[in-house]
Length: 348
Image (cartoon, rainbow, N blue to C red; front, side):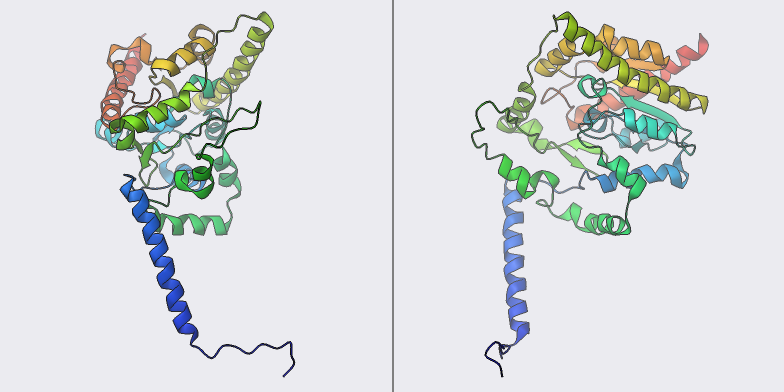
C-alpha cells in the first residue's frame, strides 16, 4: 500500500450517521424552542414561489375572480375570509410587501385570462415612486424552473410547522439586527421585523406580538420613524417630484385602459395610516397632486379612507397596518363601501 493511501476506519459508518442525526435534531430543536419562547408562531413564507402559485390560479381557470394587488397594507388590511363571507367568493391575493402594484397591473392587463375585478391598493410612498423591493415574483412567473417549482412545494410541507423557518429569522437578517455602528456618513436603516402570520393562500394577519407587546410595537414604529416627513419648497425639486408621479400615473392609466377594455373593473383603494407615517405621506405625496390626479386620469372608482366615515377610526398598531381584528372590520366596511359606490356610479 502506498504511503499516500489512507485506510477506511473499521468502525461502523451507521453509528457515525446516527450520532450526526441526533446532534442535528438536538440543534434544530433548540433553535426552534428559542424562537417559540420568544413568542413566534409558524406560518407560510411570503416567498416569490408562493406568489407565483397564486398568480397561476388566474391562468388555470380562476381569472373571473376578484384579485387584490398592492403592497403590504393590501395584505394586512383586506382579509380573504371576510371578503368571501360578504361576496360569496374568495379573492386571489397578489399584493407584494414593499412593492408598487403597477407592474402587477401591467401583467394582468396583458393576460387575457383575467376578466374579473381588480382592487389596487395605493400606499403613496410605493405607488407613486414605483419602488419594487420585492419584485422577484414577476420574473419567476415568467421563467420558473422545475427545481424552483419542486422546491416551493417541498418547502411548504414544513413551513406551517417550524417557527424558525421564517424569512425574517434567516441568518443574515438576524445578524443585521445586531445594530453594529455604521460607517461615518452611511445611512444604515432599521430593517422591518416580523409583523405577520401568513396562510397558504397569502392571506396575512398581524402577528399578535406587534399588537400586544408594547416594546415590540415601539420597535416596529421606529422603523417608520426613520423616514422624516419633508415638505418640498424648492421649485426644481417639486417639478422632479411631479414628473415622477406623472410617470407612474401614466403607467397606471395605460394598464387600466387595457383592463377596462376587456371588461375588468378597476378600483383603487387607499387604506388608512396614522401618526408619523400618515404625516410623511401627506407632505411627501400630497393628495391633490397624487391620488386625485390618479383617479381623475384613470376614470376608475377610487375609495380613499378619508372620504368615508366607516373607513376611519381603526387601530393601526405601528402606524401602517391594521391589527387582525380591525382588519376584519375594515374589510367588511370596504366591501360595502365599494358595492354602494358601484351602484351609485351605475345610476349616474
